[in-house]
Image (cartoon, rainbow, N blue to C red; front, side):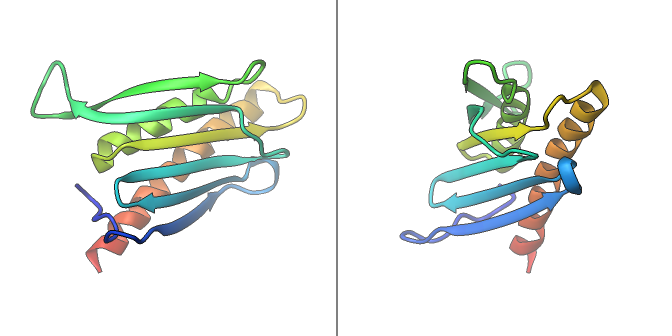
Length: 139
């Protein structure tokens, strides 16, 4: 495990952001005694668009490697599952913890380039968060 969970009865809040303007993505994580609760929001309108739960497990192909099973619930008319699912999977695998991700990012009349930037920043904010956790557990 890369990060030691807080002692019983305590939780820690961590927040990171990536991007600017309508491409800004915010990640807020509540680190509990038994997993993470993560919010990924941004764009022009933050909202709840999808929820993903990542559960770490041994890989089916290589049991010595960690993988994750992820379940997703997407609200009608939203595409935020494309952010929530990979984030939950990556965090569950990297941290060997149960992870719940709530995602909601919206840019009005988004074009393909806008979507690419938002997806990129969403995955980058997860990487920045993981790096922040690594650094805080080393010190």
